[in-house]
Length: 193
Ligand code: ADP
Image 1 (cartoon, rainbow, N blue to C red):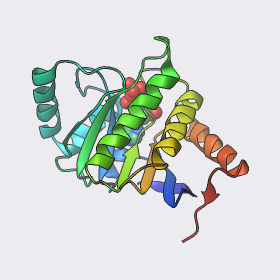
Image 2: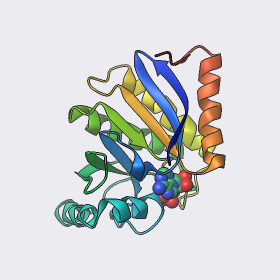
Image 3: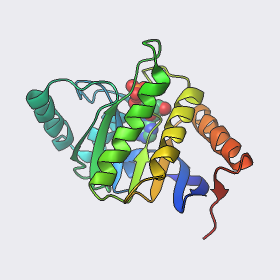
């Protein structure tokens, strides 16, 4: 089950926080917190292949065979297989401790948004990149990902809804805190139907 818990508007666009499994979402694109080799062995990546099918891993392997390993901050697209989403965008976040984590998370978020926007997608769902095995504190990820999203939405052509799908309570709390601060500062507003 996926529960929508907080919805705000920014620049006529919607930012939404939901709790649950990203593989169940119906957004045009869902983002995978991948590694440089697109080996979807654990965490959210494994969940995406499990539900979407091996086709996602096969297409990933083709990308790596053709272009070599990705850089941190890159984003590439594969089919979504049997998922409800139309597309999976794979991006690589930083490992905590390697340095410049915030800038790298900013880049991973922006390149995913740009890829989706260029494809004409209107909605995109992100997991909390790098906050699992890669060990980045959720507060840092929330700051980088949400700030990058606001900046991108200033000039987005097609994206009108960005969903952050958080799996763990501690991670959800960090994203909620960041959005609540933005509400307090008047940067975003509560969404009204
Ligand atoms: P990374 O290697 O980038 O840290 P992980 O997949 O280990 O990637 O974790 C990234 C985040 O995704 C973590 O907050 C983890 O709790 C979360 N996560 C794991 N499975 C799912 C899922 N099915 N849907 C959404 N988020 C998930």
